[in-house]
Length: 241
Image (cartoon, rainbow, N blue to C red; front, side, top):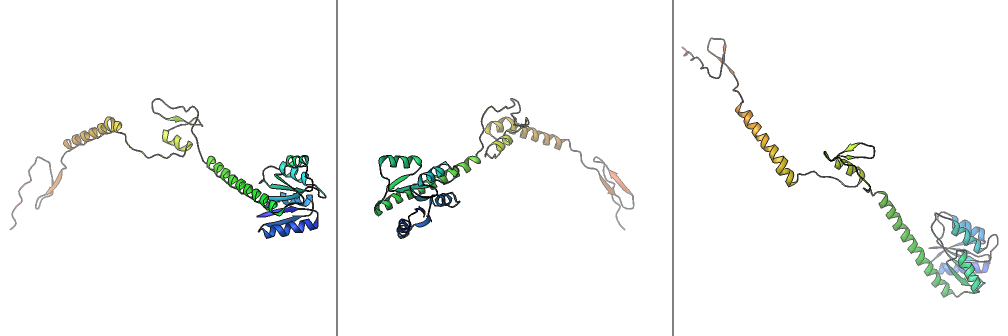
């Protein structure tokens, strides 16, 4: 994990840089408050920062205020490091936007413990931000039916947003994630489908009974073709000699 070190004193800066490297962190160095602000405003800025209170160009308190005033960016965990150690100094630093406060000269074990706390908070914030994005993406894809829906009391069509009347399944598909598979309920099977099947069977039976035989042509030997009606008899064929 990257950690910004903003310290104008060269000896203290090098000591912090060596200590963080030993703890497997990746230090990013700034020599004054203005450089620290630019580093924290970068796109892939460190999510953890150690800021000295007293620095040229811009002090640590002003850096905290400007970072906290910036919206739409990932939060930065700021540890304020200073020789000022009174209760009022601590209150002033925290109110300026610092997350933690460590007075100089500091104990290395205490610094390491506080950095681990900051790291856990940063990781938790990242996890929550990812979950929020996932929820926002899910909500963007959810369609809800709500309010008063006009429906015809006869044909059961629904009037849509553009004042068009649609079948229920068409309207539901357009306003929700529902998909339809058509079937026949038992009541409609008894009152509609069976009746239509019976009427169709009666129609087919009546059509079979009224069907007329098809006339055919009979050709007698040495005679022109003759039309045979259904009730007529064919003339006998002469025996061949």
